[in-house]
Length: 125
Image (cartoon, rainbow, N blue to C red):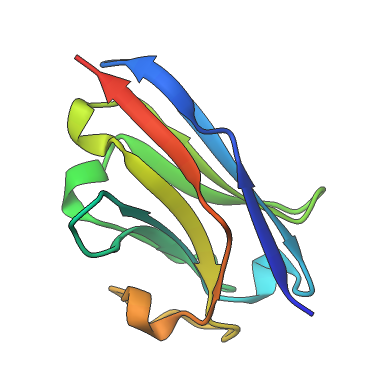
């Protein structure tokens, strides 16, 4: 059974940093397509970043050069390093997988079938 659990969210001021973790069980994190998504009330869930078994990564334009997605193979975690945070980065952040080894970038939320419960990120100006 596949289970995902996010942690690391919180409240920071603009310009600050956070690191999100997604503990993965049931899959080896480096062998499947995984993504980070975020959602704010009243809007659709949007992709933030994706990574697959080849180590290929993809980012939405608004977070390029500020966020980094990676694998933590020691603890089978998916990580999202977020620097230079902006108020518009505020939202509930979710990790997800579709169980495939390769991501077809840019990934879409509708392609993913296993989700964590989310962790809230709030960036104040």
